View 1 (cartoon, rainbow, N blue to C red):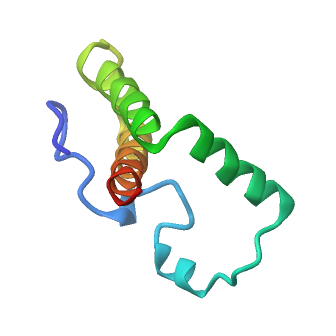
View 2 (cartoon, rainbow, N blue to C red):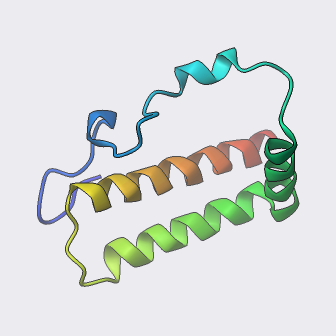
Length: 95
């Protein structure tokens, strides 16, 4: 992602999220906690495509229809939103 005031966010080393590497996710067991199961239930009820559309809309509103300047933290947050909507789009295609 490139912005008008900087090179943009192109790698995870700029992320404010300490868990920038999702490779550990493959080692998660089959058991979910109650809160994790409830979270996935809510996501499935809402719909992957609908959530992807909502996240993309919020991203685009913030990035293209706002006069707020973006620093590294804001660029990283927008990149995180983009990662989420793309993951929901992929889940929607597989469903």
